[in-house]
Image (cartoon, rainbow, N blue to C red; front, top):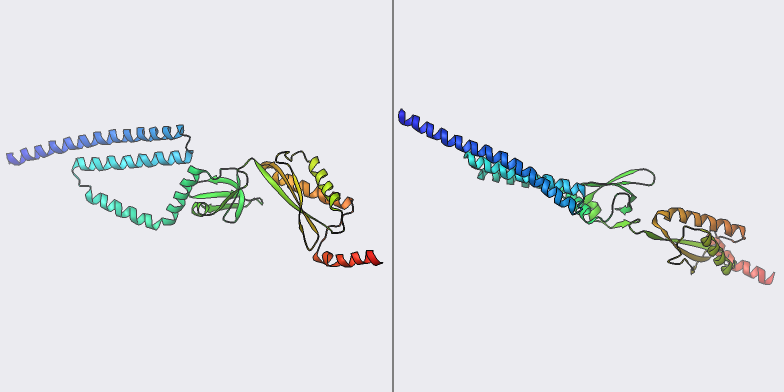
Length: 276
């Protein structure tokens, strides 16, 4: 009986030492995990990494540290963690396969935040959708369309498609096409375009505006009018120039062809002027 009692006391003392050691490992491990998380966040903040990525990486490091501490505690108590790690790995693989699409969106969101092809406030075209970027999360990108529709696009589609960023550069070229009749004077038309452009103060002097005939089309003579503006003024300047050119051409008596029928009737009009 005394032999068994001594054995029990020995086992109790051994377990007690292991248990106390495990508690110490747990307490120190939790403290170190928090310290490491804070250090990683501070380091990434100094490197000016996006706040979303900084928070995520910090939490990921913290969870990984806790997992290591938990394994060390279980080993110290005497519980074998080999099967536990195997089960955990199998569960992780199953979850990864089940969430393959979500993980793809997450990876794409991570890359979007790192490489920044666009930022919140930019006007972009992605996967056929156009709007102002409202939010970039780790799984989706949210756009606000011009008609106030909210468009939510999975980041996998964002990163794997062409991205057109209309406001990434500070300046942008306004490209306009105007058509006048073959009977109208092209020099006078150029003068009208030049006058309208000169009155618009939001147009930049460099690069210089360019006015040229691009085509002798079926409907008439096509002019290209290209000017450069600040990106923020693109829409307003485009609308203003179009309106002012139309009003001026009307006031000067120009004929703006409205259909292909005008082009077909043009030779008959010229014959009528020549012979009648």
